[in-house]
Length: 172
Ligand code: K1U
Ligand code: ZN
Image (cartoon, rainbow, N blue to C red; front, side, top):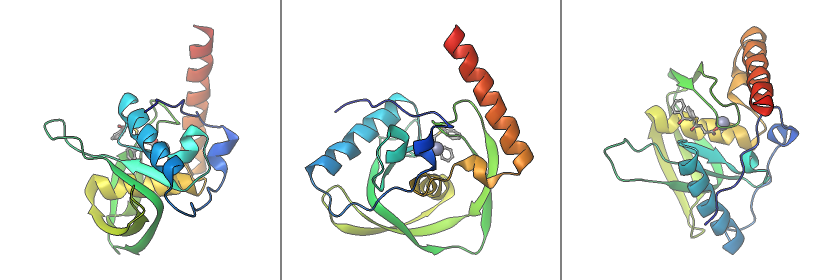
């Protein structure tokens, strides 16, 4: 397995729409494993393939608590087949927008169809942080970042703070 470099906004690849994978072959299974390792190394709870520069519809998530065993979920071609009418507000972060956080409103529960690491079709019903994280990752597959759910004012503030932080990091 390998740790992959994570793209930082405003990288143009993060705004592109990823392509469905025709099947979960060896390359996709390997990509899923590398993404799980990359997510853990970055202390994240999710990761989408475009964040590592690959425009395939693949995501990984793991929202296990610190006192629980790791529970990574690998998904190809994830698709929301049902969303709850009730909404939840959750503070979100993004490994492609480091150290910036904001509250985002989304459906509080979702049912998602996907292909697992063995290419088997599965469905999962998620609520709480898992629902938020899966929706955040599916957004990445459609070129959408959590800041795109905010007002133009808040988005501008976060992107300016990010650019300042990246400039300081580059000159340190
Ligand atoms: O897709 C990503 O960039 C990963 C992202 C997932 C995510 C976090 C929070 C809400 C929705 C989706 C992260 O893992 S950011 C880092 C993180 O662990 C975190 C940040 C804020 C709240 C909880 C966790
Ligand atoms: Zn993200």
